[in-house]
Image 1 (cartoon, helix red, strand yellow):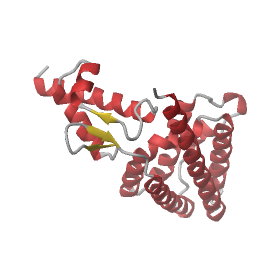
Image 2 (cartoon, rainbow, N blue to C red; image 1 turned 90 degrees about the vertical axis):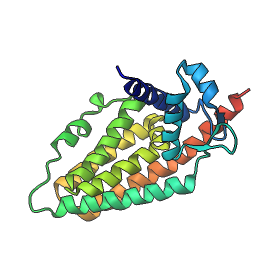
Image 3 (cartoon, rainbow, N blue to C red; image 1 turned 180 degrees about the horizontal axis):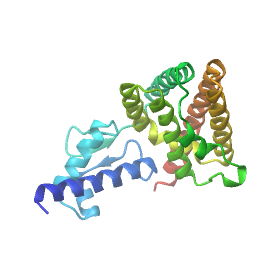
Length: 226
């Protein structure tokens, strides 16, 4: 394997590791990272470390410090709420297009995941979170606008760091199944107005819940830091 390919592979590994540590609050907002320390911890050279950190900077997780090092950016809840609001606009547009399309939209794959008996519902928070993302992306893709789907994917990536926390409580998992199932039934009957009301309520409730959980988890993580 060439040097460039090796660096790319190592950079991807470092990127995923550091990003997951940020997601899981092992690295906290305000923490300082250095290429040297990460290279020693992860047993890789500084080149893939630097590539990974620049990638995380571009995604808004890190900021290059004035001197040597990188700072983990604080959670910008105003930005997250703006992204959630944009997500609502896109998904409402998707609902409208699905309900007014000449031919019925095929939502069979989504129904197979969410229209299941209670005994077949999943409880693993990570899997449910991934399925939830696929559900909402699936709605936008079903609307048939590739550019709208691309923008929606970008938003999904940006809010994933807090959105996944919505599924750390059992009642939120149950509510997600119930509301997704209800929304699919409304779409099947082309009830655009009712589907739009439910969708807006569904996403707004999630936005409020993840903010509350994020603040709590940050507090707990900081209390545990020596």
